[in-house]
Length: 286
Length: 137
Figure (cartoon, helix red, strand yellow):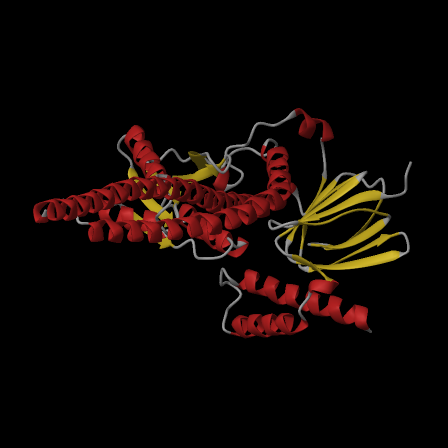
């Protein structure tokens, strides 16, 4: 049976833990707000870019640019976004599980991975897959420059014929409570569904010629996708951490009240016992 | 028909500008071009430089890096990697960037894959300096 002192110590340590989890929750909530704003700010650019790609790619044939060409090989590259730090519930394991499932379903392919985020990097190091590169998310807000670097690495590997296909795996930010891992095909770029509006607007004058604009625009598209994945993953991470820290704080609270109950009961029992002893002693003296 | 059109400048990080303007000038890959309301649909690659727009009595200048411009009769959208209005330009930082890019260029050959990128960086830094100083003088 635990002594009074032991229980008191437990209560104190759980209280400390609760303080930390509470603080982490607050920090994540603040960061989440900022990350959400960034996603909203990045949206107009990404949407416009998709429009342009859609109207251009529907006109161009698939062999007019290597990034559009379907080579049909089986060397698959995975671009996986995870967080640097843990303590965010099942956030990372969900993404990694999705990556595993994707590989299983694809059957025998020559897979290599490019990881962003320490968690993913460490996982795939243990798994023994071929790693093209590993980067950390880094602290602070995601920068467009790092997305551009990732994109140029990936495009480089694709152009050098080291990869036939690239898929991107990241966590889509739905709301603070839900994040959904998604797998998307990044390369070769297949023309997105052309919408009616783009068709109506019809022909542009191009300067330089259509092909030139396309060649400049396609790598940009990859960058934008990578940037979006960075932003979404970062927002999702904060969301996941916020919810898991919230429930951790709640659990700690529950544990504290349970322990306090046991503590009080024990204390009461000790007092009663002492009283009985005194009364018993006084009786004996009569 | 109105003689203004909507000018939007967006970067991946934010929507910098969304404004009714009468006139704008932008640095196209193959030469600078001007846009008035009712322009033919036009899509072009931009090189680093300055965008000048006129809205009423007010004239604005932005320093922009490489990007694209989509011109439609009633709306012009400019997509660039980076863009800054005069008020947000840090002259010292621009100077340092220009210097760094220049030094990097010296060590490269024209065939280097990073050559074009570094050149763009230099031009963007120069554009920022021009915008900053142009408005002062």
